[in-house]
Image 1 (cartoon, rainbow, N blue to C red):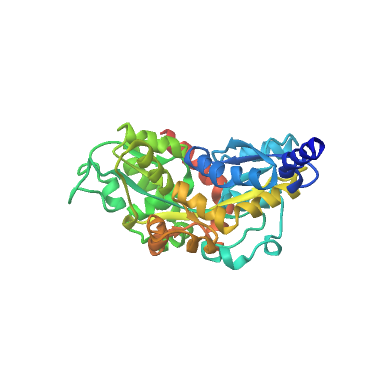
Image 2 (tube, rainbow, N blue to C red; image 1 turned 90 degrees about the vertical axis):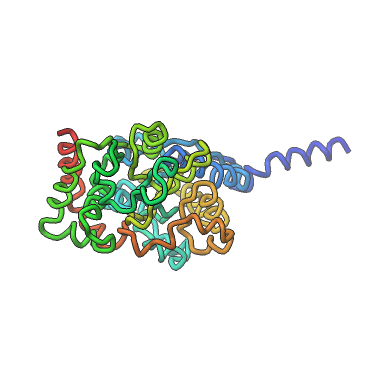
Length: 353
């Protein structure tokens, strides 16, 4: 009897490792950190380990493509899986920094069609909207910013503004402030004179801007009062409100920049197969719904929505997509692939003036 019990216990303890293969392995996954990191840990890492026995080493990535490039070029990989913006996915894929995987053989493309579809290297993981954010306890009633023109109006709403220290998204917001409908922003930006128009508009507000480089920083700035309003991502706002018992508002009606955060496999990782299985796991409806619940970013997989309550769905930006400048489509990708590096350098010089 004792021998039987000992054998049973040995099998039970070994089960998680055996579920994932001959033995348990570890993946290193880089996400955006902060609230997104919490969502990854709760919705993906813990269930993945429970289901397979494989563990995840957590790291953060602030979307500086050089951090991916240096790892691959030196063959000194730190990460196996990385969460990237749509433009970084396209750029890194073109440069051979991410593994090209035919995800249509692994997942149903229709499940991701509404958020831009599958990429050549990565797939949509969640849908993010960046919009105009203000403190609802400071601005009330009729005295609230409702448009990006209001955001630019420092006479009516005195104080510092927070903007993303990046050409992409920030130039789109500047054109909205200049009266361009969100759906037409990329057409205008890509047309002759569009970039100059965006920079001219940014120049109007530059003396009043505090630039931020991470989602955590965007929230810290408005929570401490360093800025009176900011461009920020919707999930960060919801998380900051819950954690700090605050009343930050996001005005989707002003127009917003929205797109999928992608997830991809680093080029050259010896754990490509395991990394692919991990991404497949994170893309399943239950995990997608749980991630959306934890961070209030919309799920990329359409089949996750029926698993969520009406109240949970009501906090997501899916009902405001007609007011979005979408980070998808060939015009968007072609423009930023062809101009991204030059515009980043121009933006860095501009912001420093």
